[in-house]
Image 1 (cartoon, rainbow over the protein chains, first blue to last red):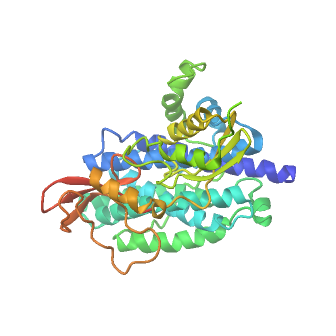
Image 2: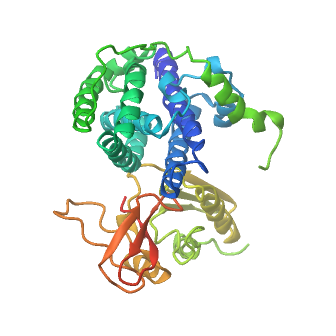
Length: 252
Length: 160
C-alpha cells in the first residue's frame, strides 16, 4: 500500500470509529432514564452494538499502524477526535435522540452497503458484518420518527424542532475527509456524493411521510472534522475520567 | 512425549465448551468456531463473532485457547474472521431444539425472503398466539415476546 493511501485510510478508519464511540456515549446517557423500560433496554443494545462496531474499525486501524484502541478512546484530546459534530450534541429530548439516530442509521446503512464493494478486503468484510446488525437499528429509529411525527401535537413539534436543528449538522456526514478522494479513486471507499443522493431521497421521503417539513434554511453545516462543539469536551471528561484516573489499571 | 493431538480431538474438545451466555448450547454448534488448523503442536482456531458488540466474545476466545492448551498444544492462535458474517442459520437443529427447551424461542431462517413472517411459537406452551414486546432484549441477540395463551413472557433469538 502506498504511504499516502495508508495514511488516508488510517484517518478514515479513525473517523468511522470515532463516530460510533461518541454516539454510543451519548446514547448510553439514556440508560436508566429512558421514557419506558423497553426503550431503556433498546438504547443499551444500540450502544453496545455501536461500541462493537467501533472496536472493529479501531481494530482495522490497529492492523495498519499498531495504535491501541483503548489509548485512542481514553487518552486523546477533543481536538484529536474525528467524529461528526452531530453525534456529540447533547442528547436533548427523546425526539432529538431518535431523529439523530435515524439520520445516522440511514447514512451508515447506505454507506456500509456501498463499502462492501471496497477493494480493501478487511474493510469490505467489516462493512458486511456491521450492515447485518445495523438493520435492527434503522427499523427501530424509523418507527420512532413515524410514531413521533404522526403522534400528538407536542411529539410532532419536538421532532420538527429536532429536524430544524440537526439537518445542517447531518450534512457533515457526507463531507469527505482530507485524502478521501484518493481512497475513492483507488476503489477503497464509496463515493460520498452517491451515498448522499440515496440518503437524501430516502430521508426526505420518510420524514415527509411522518408529517415533517424539511428546513428551508439548512442552518449551520460543519465541514472540518477536526473542529468540534464545546459539548465534546464535557462528553470526553466523563467518558475518559475513569481510565485517566488510573492509567495503569489492568483489571476493571 | 505424548502423542500429538489430532484436529478431530481438538474439534471434540471445543465442542464441549458451552456458550457463556446460553450454557445449554456449545460454541461449536452455534457456528462460532469456523476452522481449526493443526500443525504438530501448534493449533490455529478461527472464530467469528456472533454480534460484534457481544461481551461474551472475550471469554469465548480465552476458553478456546485454554481448551487447546489443555489438550497439549504448545502454541495456540485464536484468529477472528468477519467474513462470511455469522448467521443464525449456522446454529445446528439440535442446538435450536435445546434453546427452545431452555425457554428461548429459536431464530427463524435468516436467509431467503419469506412472503410473510412466520408466527413465533411460544417455547413454553407452543401457542402461535404470541406478540413481540421489544425488538431489543437482555442481550444483543434476543428480542422479547409474550405469549397471549399462557401469559408467559419469553425471549427469542433474533434471525441474523
